[in-house]
Amino acid sequence: MLKIQLIASSNSGELPASRLYSHMGAIAALVLISLLSSSGGSPVQHNISNSWEGLIWGIADPVISLNRLAGIVAIGLLAARFGRGAWIGASFVIAAFCGQMIHLYQQNLPGQEIAIAICTIAFGIILVRQIQLSWLVIAILGAAAGLFQGYADGESIIGAGILTVVAYIIGVILTQSVIFLCTREVGVIIGSREIQPILPSKIRWAGLAVCGIGIVFLGQSFI
Image: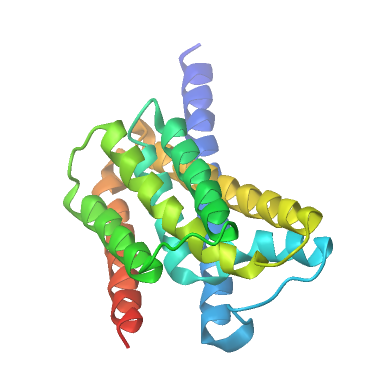
């Protein structure tokens, strides 16, 4: 009986670890894609002319900008701390949608790239310093980041048809949701008892990387 319990315990510990590595591999692949795109592999500024392009670019846009990808990853890791973490992701996605609508209706929201970089730096600092904030504060910060990210994304669909706009928004929401859920799952697994000893170093290194990305893009936004 004791042997069976030990085997079951061992198997239950292997499952979260395998899920952790698969999710981390997916995130690493997205980061690699973003790095290649940022170095000139794909144009960040683009015009969308049909629904198919709208869907494809909607899926791609949250990934090809490293600054925006880092922000979404950071929000997912922060949301893993809370039972209401799903609301943090929802606030980000809804705010991003609102930002797209603001741009489509040609309302001015200046300094979006600076604001995105500042939000990314703030998320990185919170992760590095392990600052304890309520889920509502994180949700508000996430909504601010989402609003400016959505506004920046809206540039691509100015003048596009209704179906193209809908396809683009669906693609963006899909990618943002998948990245958020994946990184939140990583945070939850890292925070579980089976691998608790690696929590401080893994999360803080991720926060340091996010903070560095934000600083780089903040500097570029002033050039």
